[in-house]
Length: 108
Image 1 (cartoon, rainbow, N blue to C red):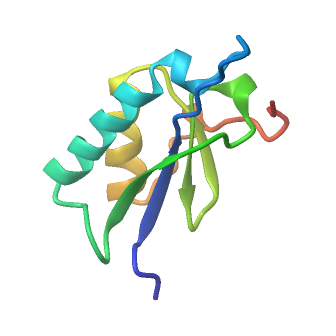
Image 2: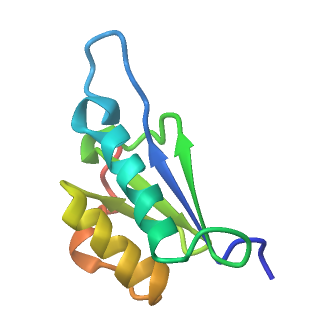
């Protein structure tokens, strides 16, 4: 068994060359909201959910992005309601939020 049931990585990459990046799309606020929501739902910690910052995940065209392991489900999101849905549906109840899944062909 894995130490965490789910591990969520949120891209917080900031580019200084003017290229689009997740940091420009509100990723830090989404990360902070997600961590707080996971904790408030009692999901945080060993055997539960870990929310981590990530550098560039190289899927910038779909940003902001996050990925949930062990399922390797890639998400894009717009606002806190999307984050809440990912936490409630996927991290809490094991149901992938299909409408937020990042299409496989979306890259940098």
